[in-house]
Length: 70
Image (cartoon, rainbow, N blue to C red):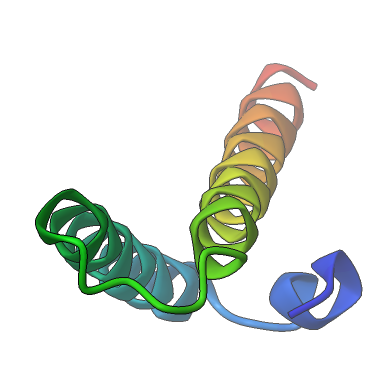
């Protein structure tokens, strides 16, 4: 999912998808530790997706603060 697609989502949708991605990352790490993980490219992909979600949420927080001050 690209940043532009994430920006089109509401704050609640982003938070829900962030929770899902964090759960997926936990499962992938568990699979890796038990030796069951086949597609190792999913780990960095999921970490980057989580970072995108958090970045866009932070951007929206800062925008809300700036609008409140103006």
